[in-house]
Length: 291
Ligand SMILES: [Zn+2]
Image: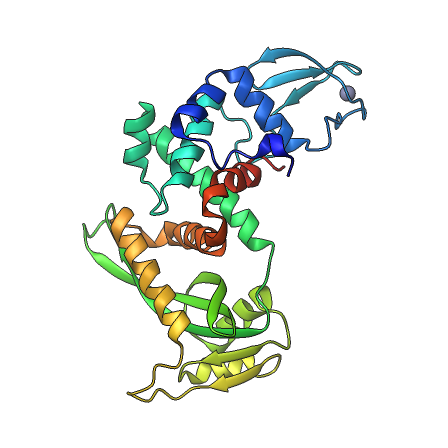
């Protein structure tokens, strides 16, 4: 990424100065979309003409319209680019995440807009997380995450949802994690999770779950741990699960089952980039503005 795009070290005062107009935000998003310079998707021309609306320009060569947000997670949005960039800044710069109510207050937008902004950013995180798979030594197990039934017919309460969690590790530390909501814990479900998220031939350490071992032993070498009370075998996995639960309960009281996967994606996106925490804004911006 070019130096011009590095925004990780900006203070809130510097950030405010840098992006105080729609033109400046559009310029930044265009750099993210076309890091090697603009190339018209219609004619291959490389020169941009005048601005039609804040997020619509014209190709100087073929005169066709170019939208800054088309094909991105903000496709067809009517929200101002300044509001989008600030939602990204606030969302990225609090490692606990932020709720739609926080965005609503900070940006003075209505709740639906705040929710839309965060859902689109989580979608961008999801797209990035989908791109890679774990390999090497993996700890894998399932857990239950409490989900809210708020808004459902039977009133407010809690449910539990099954989540499959996999953590890759390197000698003595966890490196990357992937998580998925599971409808059931049958061997086929574990198999499907593994084939989409773990490279074949990896070594898997797992808990005492027969369905899991049965689902995985075909393509992986599975070390099936029987838990002894004095020895917690899956230490990285259990630490991450407890962090996940604190993250969901701390910032997002009452995640529904329907939206749980989005929060798992957010958690993993943050966890997998924890070594680059100060650059999380630009990682997120790039994820959101790559078509
Ligand atoms: Zn063109």
